[in-house]
Image (tube, rainbow, N blue to C red):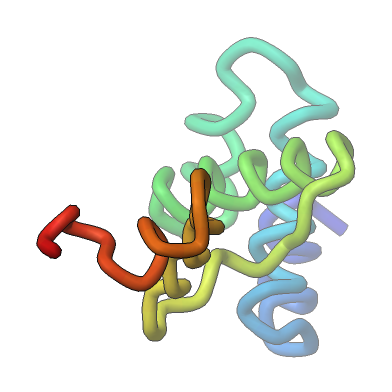
Length: 95
């Protein structure tokens, strides 16, 4: 069984994330030039292989595989009032 046949079989069985991670591990095993070689043999885009390598390195560092989610920004914490209680009631100093 050739490497290309192996890639064809695995591509049908793995989902997208598993496929990327598999290609990333193959590229890391090869070392220098691994991304280009794996991309050529598997028929995947080199960016897909590169993304798999990045995801593996992120997981190895202990980071999450997920990207930061969008959504609302966090509210800034309210600064505690410093000074007398009168300055807290009248923050602009108007009497």
